[in-house]
Structure formats: C-alpha cells, structure tokens
Image (cartoon, rainbow, N blue to C red):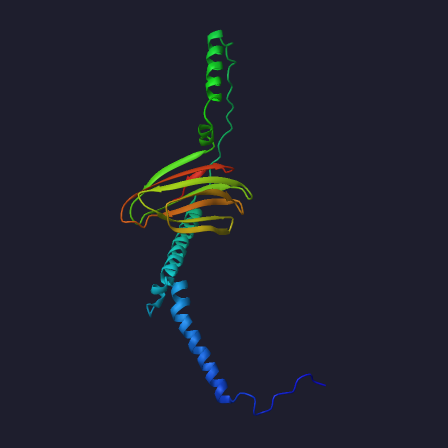
Length: 232
C-alpha cells in the first residue's frame, strides 16, 4: 500500500537529539536577533557587531526619521485643533471702465514685446512653470515644514536643493483623518519629481538640518495645487 517503507523506531531521532536541535536553533535565532535585527531596526547594538556590519547606522536612520515624522504629525494635529474658522468674506463686484483705443505707437510697442517674448530661449520658458519659490535658512538642529493644499489625485511638481550641507527630509501628507508617508531621506542635498495626492488635504515636506552649520534651502513648486504654505 505504501511506496516507501516507514522508518523504524531505531531510525527516528531521539529526544536528546531533538532537544539539542531545538536549543541550537534558539541560540542561532538569539544571535541573529542581537547582531542583526536589533541594530538594523532599532539601533540597539549591545555587541558592537551591528556597527561593524553597517546595520546600526541603518537603524539610527529609521528611528530618527520615525521620531521626526511623529513630531511633525503631532504639531500638525495641534495646529488643526487650534485653527480658527474662516470669517465670511463679502462679495465684491469690481466694475472697470472700458479702456480707450490704443494709439498706433502703443500697438507697435506691444507687437515688439510679443516678438521679444517669442524669441526667449526654452530654458526661460520652463522656469516660468514654477508657481512658487521659497528660500529659507535652517540653523543646526532646526526643522521646518512646507505643504501644498491638494485635492485627491492632483499632481504637483517640485524641486529643492540645499546649500551648505545635506539635510534630512520626510515627504508626507495629512488631512480628513488620513495620513501617508511618501518618502524619507537622510543626508540628501537635493531632490525633484512629482507629488500625487492620495487624498484631499495637505501634502509636502518636513526638512531638518542635522549639520553643525547653517544650510539654505530653495524649494520650488508647480502643478495642480491650491497654495504653498509654511506650517506652524
């Protein structure tokens, strides 16, 4: 009935062998936990092996970015609870008088300006795609947060560069009880790309200067968003 013979009782491993195997597996797991998992995930390195292998630095990055993101979310939540309701703005209708017909000289000047604008190089035209540009200086240890007000599915473009040293950043979003982390980085001198909002709310960047000297950051944004604002 069977294709293979069942092992005899003498061929089965003894209880002592099973215990030794279990104990050996537990020892190996403990060694890996202390030398690999704890340094890489939590920057806990009691043996020093994690720093030799470069794993402790990885854990320090993860814990530091997690702390900064938690601090940012706490500040944002506190600001949302204290934000006053916007006051009603009365409707104002502006009536403009019709302009007088342009003179021949004004028409010629307008045509010349238009011709000059059409002859501008492509790189100048591309620079006009940026809607907002913010330039700010961070002291050592200082952090700042800029966010875009965006609807779900909206796509914004961005470009930022740090002068004086690389910085840490956390690209994330929040609003309507939702929160998301798009990207994190440590010791990054610049970044650019697109930011697509996963939900309606505030989406942007938290920057932190971990250098010993001041750094100056230039942030430029464009695309589909309401406004770029400095968070409290």
